[in-house]
Image (cartoon, rainbow, N blue to C red; front, side, top):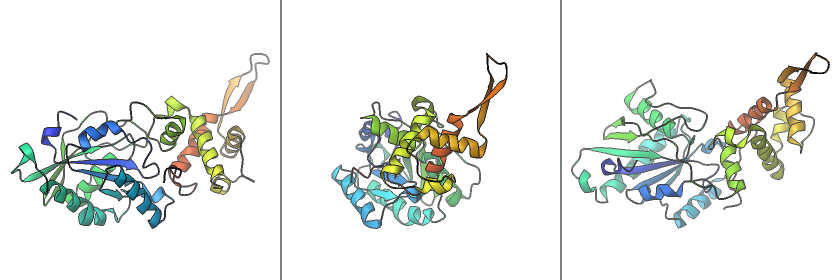
Length: 288
């Protein structure tokens, strides 16, 4: 990324709108301070914020010297209106109103797309490319888990008038998570590899969070009788309903025994949360 900065006009940072203050890699400020910077809070369709609450989030980020913030949903059919009428024009205004140094006189623009894992960086690039260049094939790989993009990719053309290229980058997590709560919020939003945290602990944190906010939508979604406090009791219910069991031979009797596949049940639970099936949420509600 450092090697590419001489060729960059604007840094586009993408982050999960459910955790706008948690997990943003402050090391990236070394890049965002060198060039014009835009922050896209993606997956806004999953956020339980009113317009005034979104304005409060933006205001707090401005106090942190992050002035150009937009809530986006890259999977929405309306996202290109925001991109074409607001985000890209803002980026070009920022570029043209500041020194371009060794880029002075160039007739095209280079953006660097950065952020922590699995916040939608590759989706941002592919969305722009498909809608503006009518390219159907993805230019960069998209995945539902952290760490799909492994290295800084070459220039990907996303606009033809004006000509805009974007460099995709691997997700770069903060070198140190400030506390357990922050780590679990990142894991809940798939910004941290599940195998480093554990499937059941992630599900347990989400259950705690939902119960603490009196959000019991999971009861209907998983066809439960009532809210539950113990994650393994809830996962057992899911195992029975969806027949998620493992089997092994009892060493004493020689007979096969069936056990709930708690990891598979936990994945089913937190996947439903991540997709918004358990209601809209905002995990950073104690930071606004």
